[in-house]
Picture 1 (cartoon, rainbow, N blue to C red):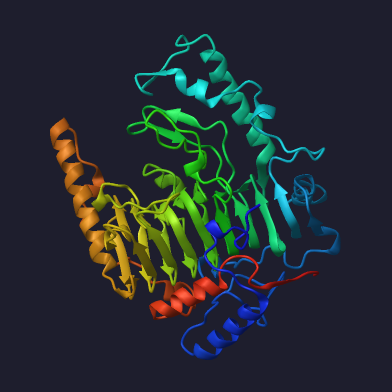
Picture 2: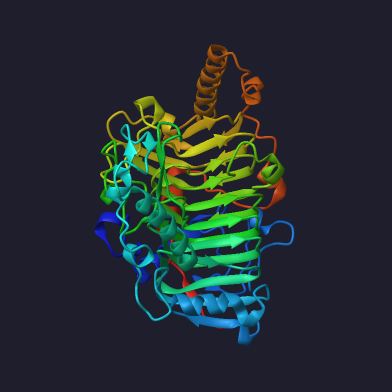
Length: 493
């Protein structure tokens, strides 16, 4: 597993205990109006199983305590997938409070007998190159008759996908705290899912996105698109979730190293990094790192899902690093989303994950304002470099007309993110109206909206928090306090 300190190519910075302790002391002393680590409630640089989500949407209502107060028999230290699945089952009472410590790295492809399963174990004989060759017209049409193996490849792809799902899916039930013991604790190749779960805490872990060997090509998705099946972490119809000091990335398997497709572009083998959908609600993502990924963090799965997502998807992103995240950092539908003191970093020429904005002819952006979203952004720092880099990359509107920002910076200077969001909304609105006129159809309902920089809500009314109010302070706090291995984990009850 590639941790956030193990590979120079994916390394943002290195840290040791002495440096972290010094930085904690300096920032704590300097911050009378702000805190460097706004969700560390333990003091002394420790994570305790009794910590509760102290701020953000996860702190509201019933709060988020995870498995705090679990009995000794419901406390586990696990080092394999089999042990982790047994711990989540919790002696037949999965919803009872439980504490699960992960020691070392757990691989989602590890079979009960300890073997690491690969593509040929899930679907012997499958070959993605042969699969692609069965699409005619440069990927536009599938044909079972293109070659004598095409029907078999189609069947094997589905077989492999289903077998892989059964193997790598890790379900975290209600009232669970999942903690990494040490800086090297984590999950690789697993699909972590919260399904109808409530009150879950995940802290101090590295999570490497699973590689979908059986990703599918969809000719009718825009100009054609790859649709991988497995997220690294997803919440489905779940509530009160606190994700803290976690690293999520593609790790050892960047998109740039994937096989090439019909357009000589990499096959997309990763889906979402941190996706929340189907009415998931009351979530805080804090002091974490989301890095080196394309479809990073999607909130809501479709504009049509107002019955599931309307009035839900309340999420806070506080003091996180978004680095080389080509899109969806986050992309929001419906939700009331607070984005505060995050550090966004990207480059137009990154070798693995270049961020090329719409203004440059690409599709990259950091924050996406989707249908019926209400985003309250404040004091976020954006550093974007390379030829043609400009602040249009900060926000793109995808049918979203409410976006508020206060005090953010682009390359160290004051930025007007609301103006960027407004310009993007007006461009997409004009395009949608023109397309409807040309086709003789009715323009979508969102084109009747007018953009507003009033988000319609204020996070300060919902929960207490402190914001750092200078770009250097935000960079320093995120670079020195986010991700796993920064704080010691206090084992035991």
